[in-house]
Length: 238
Image (cartoon, rainbow, N blue to C red; front, side):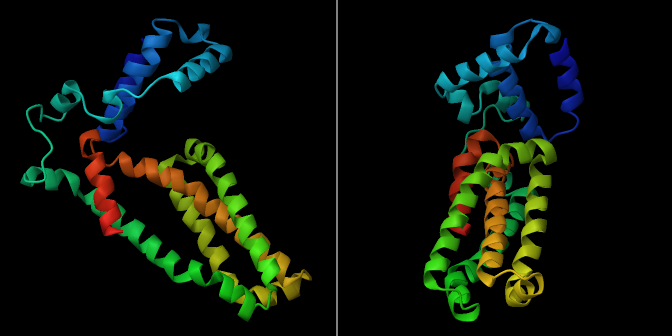
């Protein structure tokens, strides 16, 4: 069947935790609905009906907690999560998790150095009126929501890691333009206020477009039983 072919091919390409999540979705969400229907028989209206049904489904325990079969796949069926066990710390703080925490904290540290002082920079150094500064900040909020809506398409096209690399790669040049906004606005013949608003609008949209992708990627780094602890550790470390 197609599921068997897909499983055999995909299982070799992704990490074990990622595959376990995909396998769970296949077995609990897709196969129960479509059954043994041929792919050629499934139409777009069938997919839409399936999506609508998923929206009405309630969370199940196996959505956020490993089943016995999943634990057996990790060779730890008898092992339960406990902060007192050394094995727990080893599984929670793997190399990938540590690298993730480093990335998140560097990103957060850089943002904390810049973002709180944007209004001061705009009004005192670029001499933008307070009313215009408020409008620019409000437009950044609009860009933030647009970024959230486009996050799903971004991840489907570039993947989780690719989406984050693309977002960071686009935001850095935009931020580097900030000290020279006066010269840039004068060169292109547009007011500093409009130039600043456009640049910050795109920066906010791109940065927040990566936020949902970042959240879903981080949860794939650890088994489901470890995700609450992982989230708590991230909050403390951050």
